[in-house]
Image (cartoon, rainbow, N blue to C red; front, top):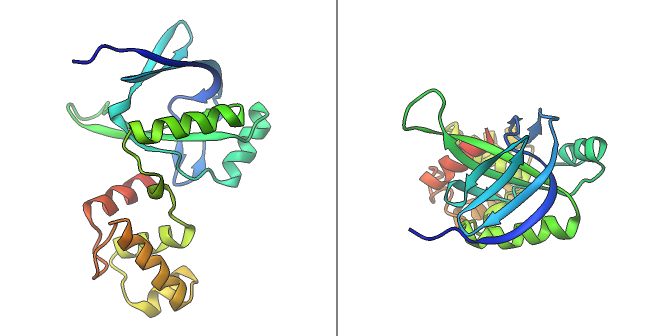
Amino acid sequence: MAQEQGIAKVDLTYIFKAVMMGNSLYSDNWEKGVLYLTNLNLWFSEGGGWSTIPLQNITMIGREVTDSIKMKAQRAIGTSHVLIIDYVQASSVIQGATTPAVALLAGNEAVINTLKTYLQPICGTPTKKQSLSDIDKKLLYMLYTGVNDLQKLAFFTGADSQTLADSFKSLRDQKLCDNSGTLTEEGKKQIMEMM
């Protein structure tokens, strides 16, 4: 087992376990504290103790930050520079199971961008994975629900056939679905993270 080694210490504002539905933020419990980045964990100072996210539990770094989240952060803490970290934690309901969770980090733009750039390769999150457009997300959801007829997809997504074809190609290139529109395991995982 590797020995834990410190990499960076940063003063940030964060929400360790943010309440989010899709891309909407329902938490406002921003906390100022210290974030320690090690080769094994992210450590968050909380009250008199520490909370951790093992790097191996991080499923995505840098999901797209919506304008509403930026505005909420700006109003609450005075910055719109936010990094979203999706991770899994032990379930409090089912022993041995995990449940998705979200941490939000906010602070100086340079610090947030440096953390994002540093964490993405460590956590195995390819940058391209973050590039789902709104239409890609809608199409992915429609395919998940079993809708794969072009006319229905155009109606439900509000996109023309060329935009849908481009979006479908993007989803296939990212290995989120196959040629028939059936979601891959990665595609199903992406849907679960979006919900």
